[in-house]
Length: 361
Ligand SMILES: [Mn+2]
Image (cartoon, rainbow, N blue to C red):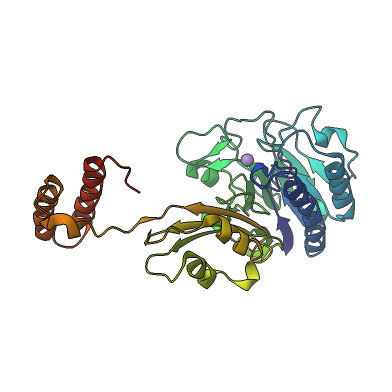
């Protein structure tokens, strides 16, 4: 049985621009620390597959090169890196400039090359992005039959459509004849997939970097034995991004509504809270921000609430406004429940705002 660790898309040295100076630097430090956790997990594997975007760009900080060197020298098993669109291979890239131990193999060609590992009964294939985009790298490839387990490590996008990120189609996967294809590029975990006889997966990124990368992040520990494959998702520790929407309609206060949904376990996390709904007294976002600051590590607060208006209250007035509302009220009552009512209510609000020469709040 062959045991492997499959991890991708570390995006070391990401700018974390939304967090700003100090916190962004701390996040980059946390990224480097994750490498130790990975090295510990690798002790359970016979080989390590790293399909690209380990670095966010070609400009890695000195600390990051050191952390990577430490990581690589801690790994005692064969390691395979297939550079992606962020860490693509050039003679000036960090991989080319680092002194890598012998067990670390970086694929550098634009077409698949093989590294046979007879002691493990397998061959590991791989190819590299050579710039920030790539044509299909797997197209036309078929692994030779009968040479033991055939694995490949590759950055690319599984899609039937167009992509400048090494597109891979279902047909490419089926024709590949591989036992396992370790993919990188997609930032959420795909779970174990199969096309033809080829097992494949994306582990997702190792750490969230924005509100489009929420939830658990981690790596895959897998086994291959004959035609069988198992995969286990191992979450890595660290802060999470959490995106919350809080409806404050009818709440005692916006503050109370938000506090009700927060968990004390999120104190080290990065939160975005979007307030929704209607109010009679506008939420004080400044004081709310102060209250929430202690509940998480970083906070973005967005106020998308609006003033409650009982719009139909004015329908009986003997004014132009009243006449306008009476027409809409008749339609509203005839519309029944649902989306049409919603639309008529909106028309009433906008109409009132126009008649009163105000903005709809
Ligand atoms: Mn990528």
